[in-house]
Image (cartoon, rainbow over all chains, first blue to last red):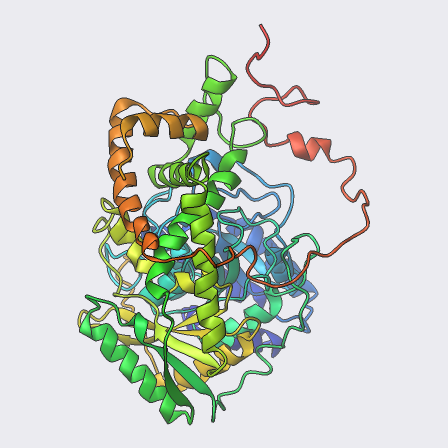
Length: 485
Length: 95
């Protein structure tokens, strides 16, 4: 049984289809490993009993034509799951049980998958280390007391630690790609409008996207194929022709032109990251593609822009948590006092900080200086990409400016924490797809990722490039199961 | 630019988040370092740039105005901290 959790999603699907394994076998194996992995703190809510029931039910009448037949899967606790508690990593939603299902998870269950549980994340997806969660830190399976990244830290930890064959995260400024990079896994942030935001707890609505987090590129492509659908319930969902990403996956990228943006060579970037990037460039050439030096001149303005736009949208989105309609309520002397105490006790420090920033930049007298200015710079950042894509098919960069850091290392300095997202944030601001793939290790043996950025709606192309590179890189994650006693 | 305690109190009121003296001081420090970082945008001249309003250049789709969720009062009330089965209940507003 122990071998089951080592299999990739694609292998598990094959084995269930060929009747080598039943859904019950597979579900049991992942539950068993999850039970032994409590120290990782990857789960906020376990739904194991119900998962096993569903697996048995599947096996009684298996529909093997589905894309995820009887596959157990844990998901980030930012997706509303009907009748299963959904917390967004916050005290304020600690008792929230949705009466409806998010479109993305609905798509997954429709293809035969089974919910294992809900995975830890930074509170309202605000964080880069999973340390802002009300439910505590998540451990990185790579090493003890190492952050798994964030905000989809529980998701990354669960995939890398083989607690779930695959999962979904959300990415507003790097929350899929950065934790994927920190845990040696593959994470895709799709084009804005590709996956429905219906039923996902909102952080910054013009930036949020759901996407797959997987052990390899093929698994990632398969899940993307399942979750990306046009949805009238999300007014920003886009009706475009979606590929059969896993079926159309090819490692033939001969003749593709890949841009290397010089502005991503930032001050103080460790040599290991530069070396990894150079290695990546060599892999691209080995695959028969060509690299071209390009310029994205406004790159260094992306993070300051993000830290106006995202908190502004968050302050507006989080206004709904008022202790009236759902969630936590603190007692107050009157209505206003109740609101103020509820939000002060219900939200953690980072969320309060961002609500305050957002409120400030949108407040009377400051709107033009901050919010409007940021939206103008956001336009310049998007224009940079549009200009670059006249000459190249995709762009290659490092995923993060460093490998995973220790728990507690950056919690006292918000700005140093924000700098983690320096290479991922521009992609969200421009609404483009980006994928992080594991590409090497640093001197401590921690994984490092490379990011491939695509044109809007060109997920197939970046998946293909990632697939071709993955073959050349032949990355092996160094997981010792240190947390299993 | 510097955000003083008076401004923090003002933002906290707008945000409906109660803040005591100690928290206000911590927030002032954090927000000042974040805004120092944000000020970098002032290096750019943007007088002739239009703001980005949407990353995807599409127009919103129209749909028929139909009621799709009917009789879900129970579901809407279900997660409320306090209700009387028909309404959300809040602290007394009118004296």
